[in-house]
Structure formats: structure tokens, C-alpha cells
Length: 335
View 1 (tube, rainbow, N blue to C red):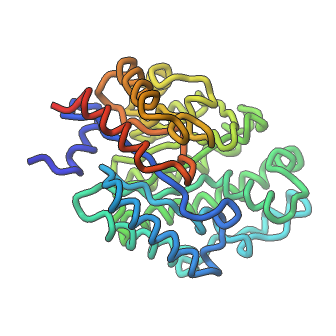
View 2: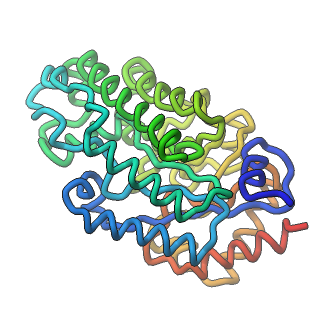
């Protein structure tokens, strides 16, 4: 009998399977707790652990994406105050025994235990650019990454490379000691604010190095191009990134699953539903959710597709809505 692991690996190799999988995920903490709060508030991490456990037990997903709530980014107190771009040269690599790595490894091991050995598990890691942008927004509020790029692009590149090394080590850590099967690597190019030529010259290498580190340990790594709060991206900037599976914000970008799959060279894809509050998967009725599911599969076919959403779905989305999707998918594709 085919295991869940073998089943998802077939999907991620664009091979025919007996049914199409369904993949959704939730945040378990509030927006203001996501970045670093888990390092100073153990109770929040316990809440995250319990959220993962409850979701896995109640929905029984085919694979698990570990939500790094409370541990989104490299901790703010590990970065210098930024008054000019040159301050970025003060960023140093995190020691490998840093609490950020220790807590991240604990999260990976804990959720792997909930998921079991037969289910693939993917650890969420945010790009170096996201780490730096969140830090600037949360602390100094003096500059955006774009502003600093105009001051001293080499300083920004230096900072991103250092953070990239830390995220690459994190990928290695969770895939070896944490026994995750791969990473779910989240990128965005700042709502197209950073010109593409600067993005490719100063940002891209720091992101690709994280995927390269993960690919050395496993071939099933997912690239998520985040449409956070309606932010659009230069999707084509990522078409050659070395990831096995692609997830982007269909409804934000205006690029369908079929169009996107072509753009990314036929790689397997995840998505379909809008993840915004008030969207179909969040508040729709059974008839409309299942009709949308059927239309989606008619367009994409059954190979190399995971039915899911543009990103994390709202926390108040009833699990019943996800069950309606799975029920329709199984009706249409299960053999």
C-alpha cells in the first residue's frame, strides 16, 4: 500500500496519483506575535504547538507545513540600530547555539512528532529580505530596504548575505536534526518597490543560497511567493529559483494556476483559493466552495497540483470548509 510520503512525493514529481491532495494552513498566533515573540514568551510557543497538534488531529492533512509563529525572523536584538545604510555592516552571523536556532529546532521536532513518520513535513523559512524588511519596520521605522539600497546597495547586499547564511543554516538544522523533509521558503520583492535589476543584483543570491542549502539535503522544497496584504511581485524574477514546487498568490497577481505552471516550467503547484478575510474559503457556502474546486481542477487537471490557497487562510476559517474542498476533490479525482 502506498504511504502518504510516497503519495506526496509523486505529486511533487508531476506523476499521476490516485487522488489530488489538499493543503491549507493557519496561523496560531496573532499578527503582533509572529516575528520574535516566541523567544521571550514560552507560553506563546506552547499555544503554537497546541495549534499544530489540534489541526493535525482534526483535519488529518496529507502533509504538514510548520507555521513558525513567534519565530518568523532573526531576533531583533541580534541586529544593529540602523541610522544609515553603513550600519548594516555591523550585522554578524548568529552563533549556532543561539536561542533562535534552539527554539526553531524544538518547534521542528515537536511538530514532526505530531505529524508522524509517514507524513512529509515542511518548515517555513522567510527570506533574508523579509527578515530585514520586518526588522526595519518593527524597530527603526526610518528606512525601507529600498531607501537603504539607494544609500548603499553593497551594504544591503552584505546584510542579506549574512542573514542568508543564517537561514541556510536553519534549513540544514531543521532538515537534519529536526527531520523535516524540506522547507517552505517564503519570498516577496517588496510590492515591486525594489527595481527588478536591483533585486537580481543585490537580493537574489541571498535567497537562492537558502534553497541550495535545502536542496543538498532533500529534493522536495517549496517556494512561496507571498502576496502579503495584496502585495504584488515580479513573478518572473523567481522562474529559475531552484525549488521543486511553487505556490503564489493567484488572486493578488492575477496569474492563474495554469498560466503560472507554464511560467515556472511545468513544476508542481499549490493554490487556487483566495486567502484574504472574507474570501470564498473563509466565508463561502458549501455549494460555492465545491463549484470553485471543480472549476479549478477542470482547468488544471489532476497531475502536479495541490488544491490550497494563495497563502495562510484566516484563523477563523471553519475546518468544515476545508473538508468541503477535500470531499469535492475526492469525488472528482479519487480512483
